[in-house]
Amino acid sequence: LLPRPSRRPPIMIGSNGERVLGIALPHVDAWNTWFTHYRNTPEGFASLNEKVTALAKDHGRDPTEIERSACVLVAVEPGDLDRRNTEDVAPLEGSPERIAQGLRELAEAGADEAILVLSPITESSIRAAGEALVVLDGLNR
Image (cartoon, rainbow, N blue to C red; front, side):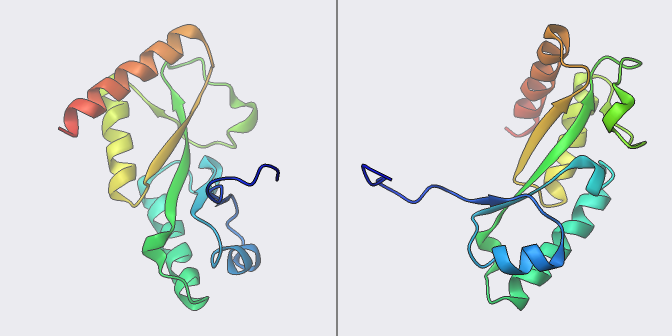
């Protein structure tokens, strides 16, 4: 790259396969998983997170140096869920308070970041997700 960057760009791996993780974990800054891989539950994320921690240790990496990220299926307009790509995964849904609580539970399971996958993606769903984030911010104070 020219001009040379002032710092190395952060690298994230989006895999759950042992072979790819074994190759990548010694070098990446973050790991991400899609909601279908952990069934969109804090317990499922915690299980995958433990796997990543173990693999990082096995490959000589301090697991605390790797950020943990999860894509989360969120349905803020119940009944309007686009089922084409959800593979029978239950979305995080309900009031802004319930969505905020679900995100907090995901954080307690080890997620440093949540990437919200809204279904459907509409102006009103984006606004409702924003309300949940305001609630979450209030819970974290």
